[in-house]
Structures are given as structure tokens and as C-alpha cells.
Length: 260
DNA sequence: ATGGCTCCATACTGGAGA
Image (cartoon, rainbow, N blue to C red; front, side):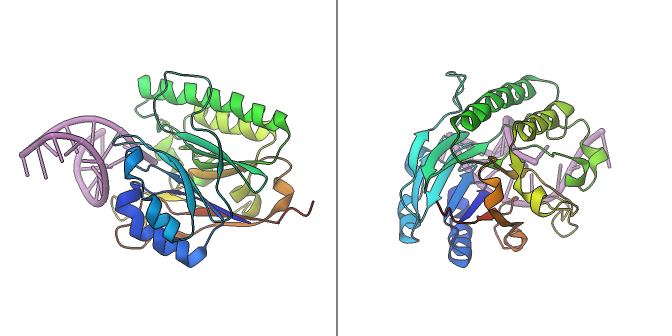
């Protein structure tokens, strides 16, 4: 079972890229972030024609998340991170697919620091820590996937000293990520590549991709009962080199099928 | 330190992204 996550930076601007990549790699499940489309403007038909059923939560201009599946309709569990009814950003959607709970998330960027946007990021992280523990306590297989907007360690930035005061690398953000792994979640990319530099994002400026000036901010966190099924993982870097591409690349994990 | 680029909105410019 192959599961992928991709921050598309507008699903409609990126539709040709997404369809090309789906045809190329045919993941079973795909989590999308930054749809940048209202609910009515999600390209459901085009994705159905490509073999994928979708659930999504759109929003005007910004944010927006979706879960696609070619192995059966995603059974939606919720479309908001619990803990703040006044949070209107479309940043979280959760569904059950093939016996696994898939949580697709788009964490707030949080810049500038300090300020209300960073406060929002920290409160969102706090809610995520609570919900992540709740999911573990439920005892079913779970995958948290998406754009965490967190650089977990110095290995994960091309020049970490440039990021020390950035919301993506601030101690509060990294500590929250550490708390998740302390809860028992397994960072799948780091598990497969313990010593290698792996990036998932390269900004549009200054030929960042050509210089490999990237960040690792898109992550898969596997619950302890899913982690032993991890076979392989990777980043489809070549997609970042396509014309009219996103500033993120697709990230994926391959899991052994459940034999039980 | 700044600005470089890309997208959206209802636009000839500004906000957001990371």
C-alpha cells in the first residue's frame, strides 16, 4: 500500500502536474494540502477519471486539504482538528481507508515570530498533540501525513543558521515534533534515511531547487502498529523540476499489506 | 538584510507563502 502527501500550492493551477504524477506512480492514497480553492472548485471529476475518489475541505483563497484514494471511497471521520470551534481554516481532514486512519494536515506557517500567526501555530500544535494522543489511545492504525511546516532538526535545512528565528525551526515548533515522536509516532522518512539529507520543499526564489537549497517540512508520522509495516519511503524530487510545478515535491511511504 | 517567485483576489496592486 503506497500513501503519498503533496502540498500542491493550488489544486487547479497544479491539476496537470497532479494527473501526470498520479499516472506515473499510482499511489493508493494521496493527501493534498494548499488547495487554494473553494469547496465547489475542487476538480472531483478529473480525479475520478484518473481513478481516484476524493474527500476535501476547501476554503476561499488559502489552505484547503483533500484525501484521494483509488482503493475505495475514503470514509470521512472529521474535517477539522478538534479543540477550537472558532478555527475556520481548512487545515485538517481525517478518513478511514482500508483499515487505516489517514490524517491529512496542513499546519500553519506561523511567521512572523513573535505575533498572532505564531501564537496560532502554537495553539494548533497543542491541539494536534492532544488529538494525536487520542488517536494512539484508540489503538487503531493511524498515519499523520502532510505539510507540518516544521524543520525537525538541523539536518533538515540547507543552512540551519538562517532559520533559527523562523517559525518553522523555532524551538517551540521542533519541541512539538519531538513530543509527537515521544508519544510513539515514527518519522518514516528519517527511519528509512537515518543519515541522509532529504528535502521536500525548495522555494521559488534564487534557483533554490537547482542549488538544492531545500527544507524537509512534509512528513509521515506512523503509529507504532503501522511502523513495522514500513517497507520504503521517498521524495519524488523530479516533480519539483517540472514546468509550472509546486514549491513542494510529493512524499510517499510504502507499507506492507496487513496480513491479519 | 533584502529580494527573489508563484498563487489568489476582482486587480493593474497587495497578501500569503516558507
